[in-house]
Length: 438
Image 1: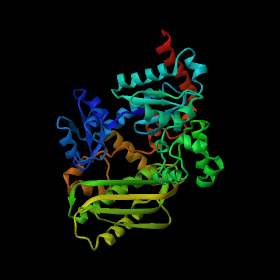
Image 2: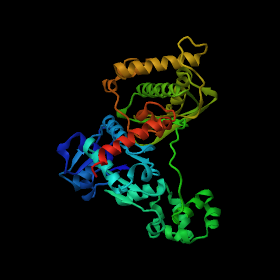
Image 3: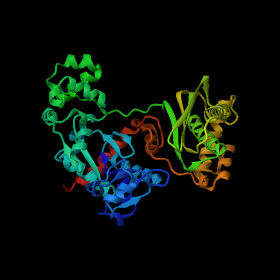
Image 4: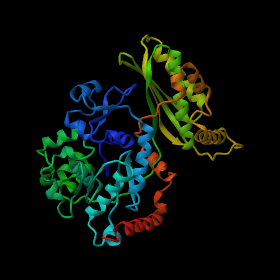
């Protein structure tokens, strides 16, 4: 399942008066930078993702530019996935607007005399009716094929019936395979493989020798033989980062440093709540002429304390900005090489880690009840006093890791399949409710 022009569709769902009009969503610091999403009406005029908003307005003067409302997009996404999980015992979200559902055993337990197309159509209709979002869908014998079918079938639904996979793929370009890079595409062209049909004709050992296990998988896929189970994996993150374009070009380097420290404090708190610590960090500053300076540091042992990490960050900032004179446009901070932090949050714990984890949990819960800035660190408070614009931080673009999406959906990052029996009961109930008459 894949949301159609998701951000633009969300704006229409939030404001039904936009229905039937050309709509695009603008990014950048003021929401009028580049187009980050455009609906089909806008695309007919030539509006595309990545185009400057002023250019979109020129070629589509009656279109509507919407500034992004990321918090609303997250909520609409959550409601969309809640409906999806009623139709399958296994749901694997992959982005804010896309996910896979496992229909492997549906024919035995749910469909019976029902067609897959009618079942998926009911799912799509419910999302449109209850959330206001159009979604497309593709059905195939693997996640890769279902994704390709969705892209080909947009807007709507496309099923690749069992046994027809090779015929469907034979004339399709290999570049349509989700995730294939241009380098691999060029390497395949050297072998004379432009389409999946060309790949199917090549010796499997040749593709395996050239591309390793991926080459073998490609050969199986091109011949309609690739089939893998849909598995929901919840893995610890390996990196955490933040990239923020400031509301205006900041000539005051001390203010820019305060913002960097505030962002790093937020990231470190998130890591501790997830019981992780970082071995490496990096800071990148983009100036108003779009040049960048950056620096990094590797700790001797993994760190989880704000005082230690922010002290290093401040040193890096002074080092890389000592020879600069231009205002700061964007600040990026990152922590990676993450390792487990074995703590149990207890305020009276025996170690710093245990006590910090307890404080993080308490802070997070209080901010959830009383607002995002009910409790702040010194750096966060200083940032608010420097500029009123920071009193209500702008929501980040919701490209979140899969594990965070899972936690938002089910309230835990433990294995959601622990509740599979409950889901199957709900699924059967939904099926009876919607399809007994038919």
